[in-house]
Length: 173
Image 1 (cartoon, rainbow, N blue to C red):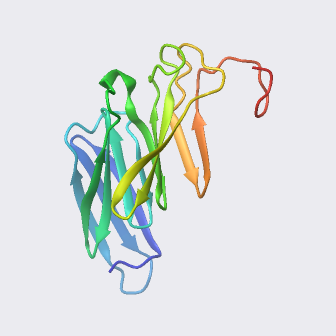
Image 2: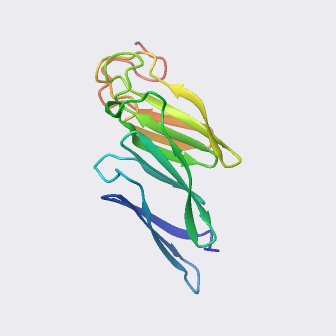
């Protein structure tokens, strides 16, 4: 089993993801894998890692891999029902423990291309939809979900074109 203090790097390439895990301890273990996921490999797709779980997302799908000994095994393939590719589900994705957040920057829940972030939780080996996050002040082309971050029970979602004069949380919307 690879050491828990390993350095892990992820590199998106056409058709999948290259994983490079190198232990920093004496007697280093080097582990490399190519995680092939059909249709992945264009700029902007999401990837994230949390301990023994990796998410690779893009083109309307999120692939979840878990470490099994020295191998990485696909645990789940997640989509959003009735999500057309134009929504960009998977443009961003991060995982922390048993929680996954996936950005869909063009999802039209509020206004045209206002965006959303989808939250899933892992129960056993299943990933279950938990919530859909949208900005409280959606506008066309906000692109909410362009970037996502998660740490513990805190999720942050970026909207690079959000144009209000609000400063702080729940400011002047």
